[in-house]
Length: 309
Ligand code: NCD
Image 1: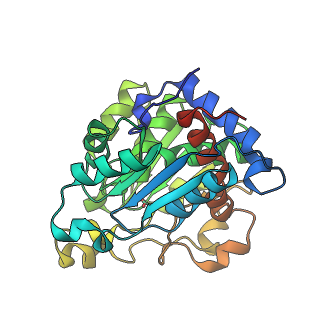
Image 2: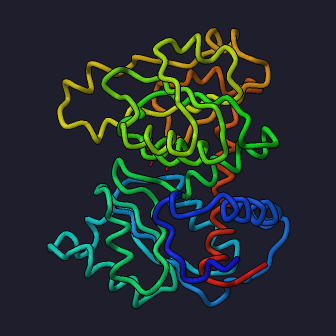
């Protein structure tokens, strides 16, 4: 399988076989991701990380991944320190990154921004989140986490909880889980339901998601509980946000009714939707999940820039 030069814009651009291949390669990256082994397969290569929106894990794990493979990174974490402030267009900023580097990671508040960026760059463009759209690399690390913790991706009962309307991670993940035939349950405030388009995509793949209002009931026989933050920054008005803030919270009391081997995931950052008391339980895998961003992104960078382990 050859991914050299390929843009990574949406998980929908990948077949199940391709995803399996990436996840297998990510597993091989593990000893290189924690620094136990080192091989500079991307020596001499430069990655641009262009973050028009805030990020901790995505940007730092991409940068760590590139460094772990012996490559170098240029970029910005805040567009206000760039010529964007002077009114430069996204297209022109992308053209510059294309001239200065071998691959471009871009996060932007506008849906479709990564797809647009890819049109202006010869170098591969990787979508690190486009507004309320998609987040394919997060999706791959989420799948990697489920696979490592559960030994399989399909045949799991997965509950997606929270802001399913604006949460881009769950848009990608719902599709990918349906591709593997997992059972899907969506729990969210009524105003933050999963977009129809994503529900339709799941149905086309033969999976009919169940929408449930009771979190207690949904969690009872689940294998995976995937929690999301309410995406405050995407709400058109503060009142809409105030109506849903604090409407769900995962704590030990809720989990006392869950299966012992239930795993709790979260793309992070969390605000108040998971009580810190959960961190110490065997259910909590969200910090491991965040670490998994490194091997998965190492695999992707190595594949798109053609420097194989
Ligand atoms: C998520 C994102 O940016 O979409 N974070 C991440 O990439 N790990 C989730 C969020 O911000 O709530």
